[in-house]
Image 1 (cartoon, rainbow, N blue to C red):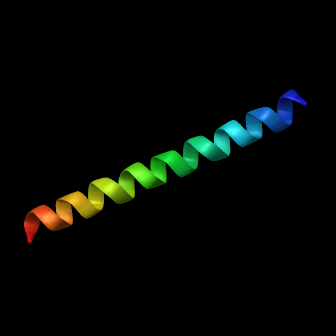
Image 2: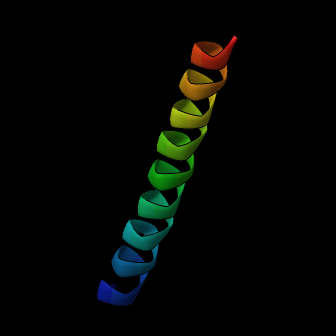
Image 3: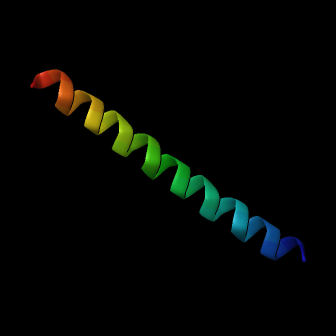
Length: 33
């Protein structure tokens, strides 16, 4: 249903944000060192 698709989309967006934040954090960490 549309609700399930929306929930999956929201979850995917959260995962993408976490991955981007993790990557940015790692990049900053590597840059500092």
